[in-house]
Image (cartoon, rainbow, N blue to C red; front, side, top):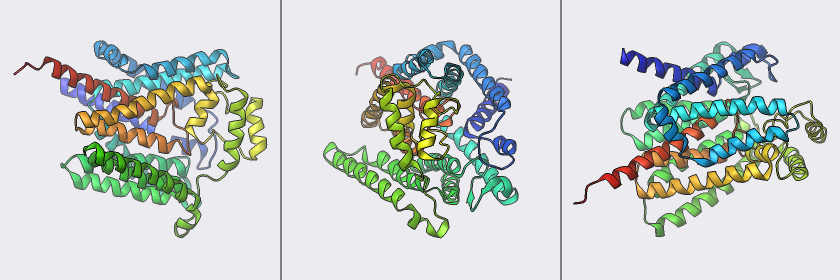
Length: 413
């Protein structure tokens, strides 16, 4: 009976991960077109179910729940600012609903971290991406009305950039397994190559650039960070500099680079969008416009940006700018301070204890930076990226405390 319950719980977890990663339901509701889905009641029901189930499962393990909750203050501070922003939000109803969604998403990430080891978490994610990859190929090849948009693939997602973003993350997970484990490497290589093919077929320049950088990052973090400081620091500085230079060069030259496979630059339109977003942040710099409230068609601030850029932007296409818009300097500072502390802490922990667990935290934080340069996934409700951010941070801290406890409890010899 116990084995059955464990298997059932894992299946429920996988189902929720698929929900957060994205399903083809949006495509069916849109009948293959692009745009906003009008009635999302069914999605709300699914996500609310995931929030309730996650909370109940956490309550069943309430000691672990309380212990995990105390591991990181900055995530809870950020949630608190999001909730308080409803008092000054330009659309308080939207802010309250989205804060509820963000809290529910965070609870699922916390459950994921407290219930499964990091290795188990990554394996479950690999299963989800394997399933999604098969579905993407089936939709593109046999249901092209849904799976294709022009000459670019979008698979089971509403936009090709989402396909590219998802499988950069998938490729990162599979390559991480290739580097850190010896078992079933051929399966990991198959997953990595398949993910790379889907990124290419999405024809998203920034996703392809991110894939190259993340592949290099996984290798460098796992191999280089164990070297002596005199060797490690110059290599890291060189890698960081080359990564920034490469990224800027790649996205500016993407038309020429991707000409043979159908050119597309995901920075199209952002050169007009970002200056307009900066102007709006300067008008309300300290507290912002309220979590999740700015990009609603019913407010004057959003309409000013649309008039300036001449296209209907769904967000700032930059996660850091969107935090500044929603939560101002207050929320942005809380997130950045927590992020930097975790980033530096991950490097320190790799030096302290050479395990793949600490390497993953650093790898995922790097992915978060890259993915939010041209898209928005920071502190986003119902987002797989936020689920994995929460689980990576809490998993590392839970594991670290276990190490320290073992060191303290170890008998003197």
